[in-house]
Image (cartoon, rainbow, N blue to C red; front, side, top):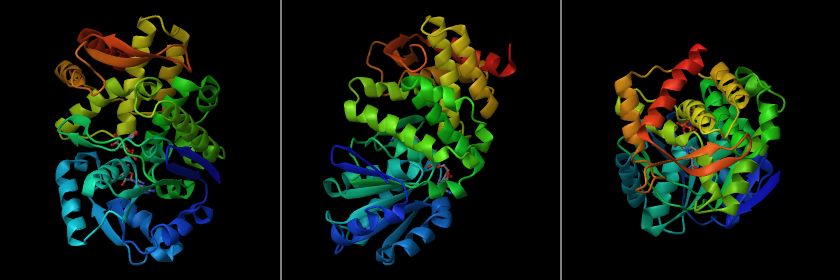
Length: 362
Ligand SMILES: NC(=O)c1ccc[n+]([C@@H]2O[C@H](COP(=O)([O-])OP(=O)(O)OC[C@H]3O[C@@H](n4cnc5c(N)ncnc54)[C@H](O)[C@@H]3O)[C@@H](O)[C@H]2O)c1
C-alpha cells in the first residue's frame, strides 16, 4: 500500500481491503449516514464487490447517476441534492463516489456545496479516474458545450485507488486512461514516456507493469498538485492537450455525439504537439514519435472546416484564458512544458487540420 497526502486528503494506492477504508468507515463515519454515488455501469460492475467486502456499507443509501459526460450537468446535481434532503443528509455524513471521472467530478461537486460541504471519498473505477480525475480536488460539471465551467476546488477526505476495478473496464476506456498517462509522461517524465511508447495500448489491461504504470502516473499528478494546489503555476501543465481537447469534446457534446474525454485529449495532444513543433519547442523527431504513439492507439475523427472553426470558437471560452486570448500549455522538449503560450484562432485551426495529416500519414 502506498500512502500520499495532499493537504488533508489521504491517498492510498493498492488493495482497498488492506487500506484504511474499513476503519475509517467504522471510526470516523461509524454513526453517520453513508451515501454511495454510482453510475449505471459502476452500479453493475463495482458496487456489489464493495458492499460485500465492507459490511458496514450494507445500509448505505445508493444513488444512481446516469452514465456519460452528457449527464455531468446541473440538472442531475439538483436531483441528487433533493434526494439528500429527503434522506436528511447532514454535514456529518459522508458521500462515497464510486466511478470514473464523471462520478468523481460531479459527486465531488455535489458534496462540496451541499450544506456548504460534506466529506466525500473517491474510489475511482476507471483508469483515467485512477491516474488523474480523482486526484487534485477539482470538482465540476459542464455548462452546455463548456467543460467543467461550474465547480469547486475541494479535496476528498480520502482517495482509494485499487487496480481491481480495471478488470471490468471496457477496452476503449482503458485507452482513454492511457491518454492521460501519456500526458503525464510528456509534461513531466521523459523516462516514463520512453517506457510507455513501448507498450501496446490494446494490451495495456494485461500488461504486467500496469500497476507500476498507474502508480507512477498517479504520483506525477500528486506531485504537481502538491506543488501548486490552486493552479497558479506548474499545475497548469496538466492542461497539456486539453485546450484543443476540451474544444473538441465541447463541440462533440454540442453536436449530440459525445467523444470520450481521453480520446479528445489524445487528439488535442497531437494538435498541441504540432504547435510546440511550429514554435520550435520540440523537434520534428519528437513530434513524429508522439504522433506515432497516439495514432496507433486512438481512432481518427474527421471534422469539417465548419466544425473546426466552431471548435476554435469554443476554445475562446476555456477556463484557462484571460482576456489576452487562447492560452495553451505547450511542450518544451519531452518531459517539460511552456505555460501560458498565447495561441491565435488561426494557429488553433491549423493545428486541428494537422490532426488529419497525422492520421493519414501525409
Ligand atoms: N477533476 C480532474 O482533475 C479531472 C481530470 C481529468 C479528467 N476529468 C474528468 O473525468 C471525466 C472522464 O473520466 P472517465 O474517462 O473515467 O469517464 P467516465 O466516468 O464517463 O467513465 C468512462 C466509462 O467507463 C464506465 N466505467 C467506469 N469504471 C468502470 C468499471 N470499473 N467497470 C465498467 N465500467 C466502468 C463508466 O460508467 C463510463 O461509461 C471527464 O468528465 C473529465 O472532464 C477530471
